[in-house]
Length: 345
Ligand code: N2P
Image 1 (cartoon, rainbow, N blue to C red):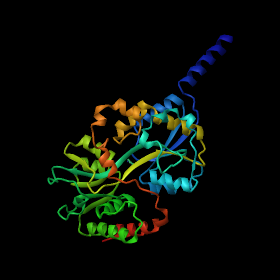
Image 2 (tube, rainbow, N blue to C red):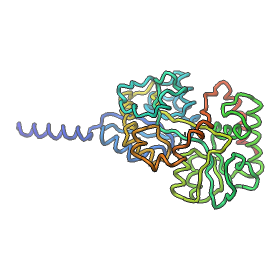
Image 3 (spheres, rainbow, N blue to C red):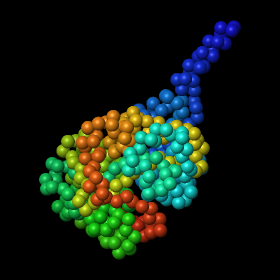
Image 4 (cartoon, protein in one colour):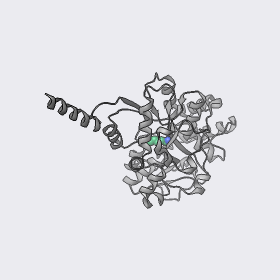
């Protein structure tokens, strides 16, 4: 009998060490196509914590969900300007950095971002730029300006990003204004440019996550994309190329944050720390092809990463870009103009 009890204990102990016992859950809300499936499986295996994974496409969609969540979201991945907004609305809780030891791997220039000035609420996950992905078999002229997206010769050959800040931001930049413009006349001019682009028949579709696969399949000549989606597509189709236009663009960081009402705070910290672990940060960066804020992961990736300007843009390129800032005070105007762009016939 004693032997049996002992055996049962040994079995229990080894089961719990392999994480076969559920240690609760963590509810993760992340962008589509933004993590390696393998990373989720590895976390579950190592910790026994079950990951409930949910996706969003835009910060604007994510914000609505987090505002209305009832504690059912534990980790979210908003961009800089959305983090700024979430802090302002009291939607986030402070991160206990002592429980996220791997966050020491964050690159210096991303350690004290102005969207989280006291560095209390967020840890960078990935970063990147906004630019043009183009098919060199269809676009033979050199591409260095946003102007190419508005050129009538590319009839039904341009995929635009179905994202108000990205699309209006690019139009603002092309006109020589800031991506954070609060000047109604500038925002109107940007919207008019997008409306004309649509009315001239240049836009093939407004979309987001579908663009990378459609570009791989040669379905358009040009597309407005985020850098990682561009690199992902380039890996699959060598005729594709990516450029951050000379007029400048948006540079962004997506952070990891914990909603104020998250039900599983401890598990959220474990998940965030896991994603900051060098081997896991490498696994994710190599899978999704975005830029890593994790210096230890960058070292592991080596030359292949550092020599790729799409992933590791020059300081000059970064300095020519702007971060988005929270534009809540003028959001109604942006939304109104964006509605006009989307409804233009
Ligand atoms: C990838 C999402 C990229 C995040 N689907 C852009 N901030």
